[in-house]
Amino acid sequence: MARYRHLFFVCNNQREVGSKKGCCATKGSVEVLDRMKHWVHQEGLRGRVRVVESGCLNYCAKGVTVLALSGEAREEVWYTGVSPEISETLLISHVTEEKIYSPEEEGGK
Ligand code: FES
Image (cartoon, rainbow, N blue to C red; front, side):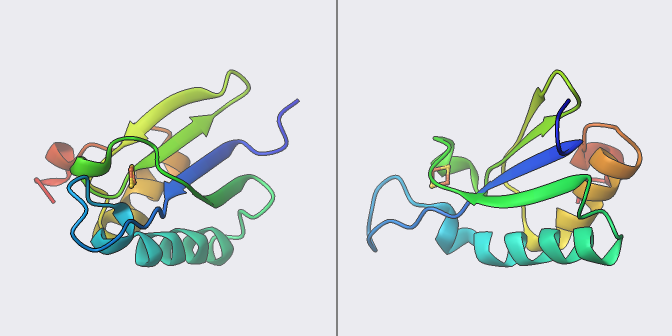
């Protein structure tokens, strides 16, 4: 039995300034991590949901990348271009509503 219902790996990789690949650390990953962890604590979900920092998830050009593994089957959902502003909405959709977050359904946020 899985310890957590949802695991979120948030890329917080940092590359040298001027790197062609870019990195999530310069695109707001620290704030995404902070906001996601804060939401989990605020909602009292620490026993069910875990947000952890990861290294590069290889979607560097697409903005902050988050890999969600959910359920007993550890279904993978990849989110790219995650901004601090949408991180809470993403969690509400993914965790509370158990739907894959789609910016289009949120009015293109
Ligand atoms: S630096 Fe974040 S996916 Fe590569």
